[in-house]
Length: 448
Image (cartoon, rainbow, N blue to C red; front, side, top):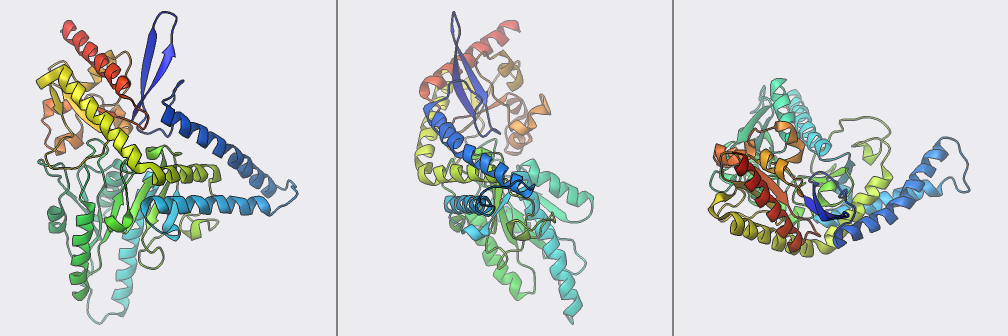
């Protein structure tokens, strides 16, 4: 997202906008009030936990303290409280939450678990059944869509290369930008074990029909059970949606949900929700060690970061509707100002008729042969932003595959710029950024 800070210079007022899609707090000198408040809260929160973590570690190293048990007990209380806050944020149960290093680990853990469970179950069936399994000899099959994050796409491509699994990448609709439930269901095979569809796209903001997909898969699973076929599990990467709209696992109906802290002003760690962990939904560790997180994700807990994640989740649970309303108001104003300044030269890449999108995301192109997104941003004096996903910023002038998948023409996609408003972004700041873009375009066209 971009947030704005003010630098006072001797002769002028200088504005700098920071793109922080993948940052938990903005690197700014003077922050918007909402962000500043969160910074103060988290700073006060982190300090005692960092000291506590050091103290627990020091005791493990043989240093003596008045009560050798109390710090460890306190650390456990902090972790449990954070787990409860995360569960409250998504409408789940604390015992169904596992802390991870981030979204990439959470997504890989889901894929790893489902593939391993498929092989384990069908090996057991093959040992005991009189008749061959309907999927005997088949590789596990996974369904996803063409606009997923790399932490889903690349692990799946790796499994295909290693001949460990088969994957179907369902195209999104060029009409609404969504992975449609009908297309997902049509891709199901006897060996299908997982459907993984993001809750909201990180470049367009389009909300995927995850509740409908889950409902259709549950109905299909009843038929599959009668035929001796394995059930299909449903996972959603909710990274982009959390903190921007209400997310409830009961409404979504998913078996797994990925949580990423820095997407809702938390630290750069993550978590994974598993419906009925250990009872209904399988999870197999990728790591082996000390037994933390009930052996599902061993390794000494990062108590300060977990505490920060829990506090960020608490703020979302309490204020999500207010955050959403503010961001939608400012984002809509941004799009109005862009249309007013550039007229028919503006193409809003993230607006699809009848499709819901995140309240903060604006993906647009300024039409013109010399107005590629990278060139426009290079001419901006006050704005730092990205052409697409910030984690793909090394793609140069290549147009976004996500936009192309959604039906955005090649010449339009090359000019794409993605802006995202935050909790503290104001209309006045939007005005300054739009003027900066207007002047950048004028400079480029003056050079042509």
